[in-house]
Image 1 (cartoon, rainbow, N blue to C red):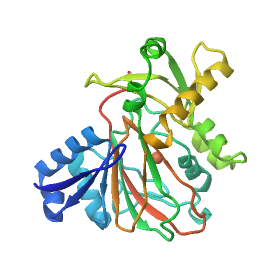
Image 2: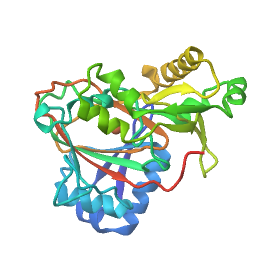
Image 3: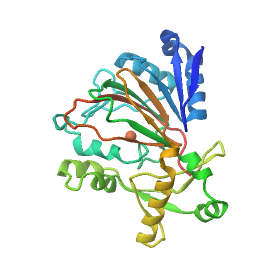
Image 4: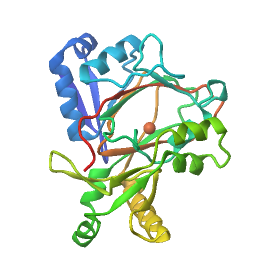
Length: 278
Ligand SMILES: [Fe+2]
């Protein structure tokens, strides 16, 4: 299948699809997309305008999807989760964590492989951008001395920490939800099956095992600062109908702030991962 691929800076690629039916129905197309994702970290499909049925079908083509029967998840297409900030949907504080740099599924043994997000209601395109940076590149930019020093460090990640950082007064429901996932110890440096290495950084990172708490927090802050300098970040300005896919294993992301009552709505699918952080 033929796509037009336009490189984005500093990471990512824009994919122009000429034949939507082929994209949704062609097994080879799925393989090409996964290959492009591996190479580019982020894929942007401008105004491709998928509905839920098409988004679910596309994601199933790419791999096994995460499905849930919970609040916020579609009954008809259980792989689709609606992201909205308004309190009416009762996901307010939980979603605020997405305004800080993070990867999805931070406390799971095996991280989701990729996330597929479509913009459905974008009331104000000047806000709510989604930003991405490569954690492979963040590792590659370390000095040789740092690579050696960080090789065996392990970091505690906690959803409750991320919640309290983004919402100083969380509801009991939000705390219970965050505590349902116990903290997880991940290596700071992930050596992937491919042999590539990335830094495991995010707003859930609390402390470095065996290191003084303040010293560990300072190191994590510094590494995050360096990874997310503006020159290393691609910022996506949303138009209704855009779809963006990112490789959750080698890219961290955040949403820029937007009005909680703006009505902004995104639909998300997540692909089940197949490689533990090690
Ligand atoms: Fe996220």
